[in-house]
Amino acid sequence: MRALTYVGAFLFFLAFYLLFSGSVSLYDVTVGCVASAILTVLYARIMYGRDLRPSDIARVGHLIKYFFWYMFVAEPRAHADVIKRALSPSMPINPGIVEIPFDVKSDFSITLIAGSITNTPGTVTVEVDKERKVLYVHWINVKVTEPEAVREHVSRDFEKHASRIWG
Image (tube, rainbow, N blue to C red; front, side, top):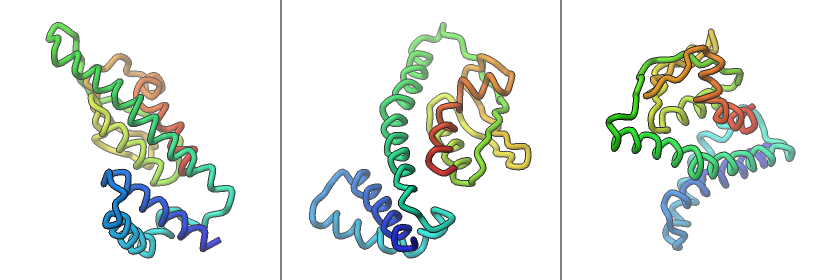
């Protein structure tokens, strides 16, 4: 359903704009609607990769759930760890670059995982190898080096959410 694709993209862009503008004044809603309409025309088909179906509404629910989990669980936990390390020089750090496998298929999922890792304090995605399906991540305190074990520590939750949102 092409209409659902455009409506879904428009609402996503508008919600994103209003959430990060922090205002629902008439001006912000108007600017948000205009900006969202332009972005919808330009990116709706690319954003989803296909026309949306009514069953895709569950994906939006997963996206909302991911946003709140990321902002109120993953980020604060990572910030607290880095703050403890900064304020306690005796805390060990063991920086290094680790290899993390991933199973998602879409570029959107890969980007969401890599971006989430990078935005989380203490980790930075330095390279994505789509052919080998691995991420190379700089980790402030390498606890394990076996790729599947690293995945459990660093990216398992991000990948779980990304696969539910983008497939």
